[in-house]
Length: 113
Image (cartoon, rainbow, N blue to C red):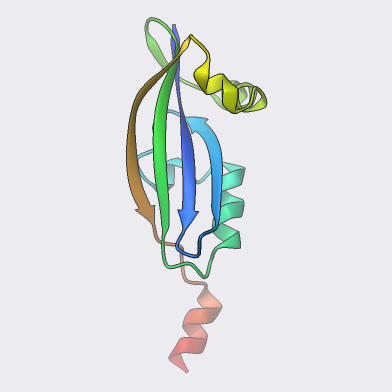
């Protein structure tokens, strides 16, 4: 059995950055919405016009692939960055996408005045 997870590096257009591990291989912001680090980063960067997400996907183990659950991701996160260099962790590839932070309703209201 192997477990799929990804390291996601978020970089806002203001230079702010954060990194998190998550389940599977995110393709868009919907795949990150439930992760606390992503939520906090996005709320801290509401004034950014865009946030780049660089996704590095990994498999831990051999055999049939399963998507890592939140408990497995927490355990991997607890092992630190060196875990990604463990002999049983295999890089699968990279991808990128852009997230456009939502405009707050109050800002829309003020802009319309």
